[in-house]
Length: 146
Image (cartoon, rainbow, N blue to C red; front, side, top):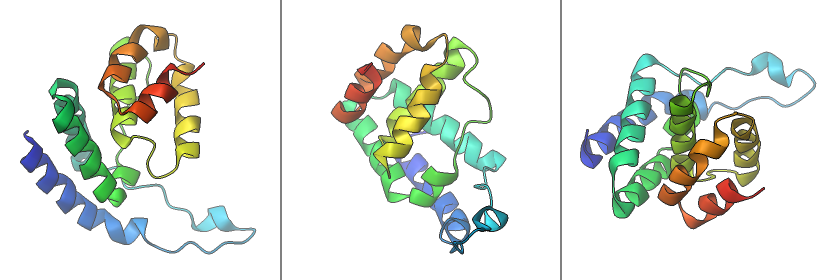
């Protein structure tokens, strides 16, 4: 998949997911009663996997464009998740690449919590430098922080 095909695919999925992502949630003591998990369909997972593959093999300018596609399609970015845990070196590599694409958007505090989970992997020390080299300056600093 090239950048333009990725942009079209993510845009179409974003339009499908937006009504769920933008649905208001009533606050109160029963807030979790109305919570719905993000819709992570097989098509969403496949598109995320294609985005990650493209990101890992692209140059710096293309990686910036991929991060921007995710930033502009916030419903897709919110819903898309890899369907497996970071339980091997290759799977952690894919999770960290996804983390790099999201680039701490929309909330760096959420990114820090996500990264704290990823850092628990016994493979983190073997993988983080490779992904840091592909990341924005801010995400690179976060990946390398102790």
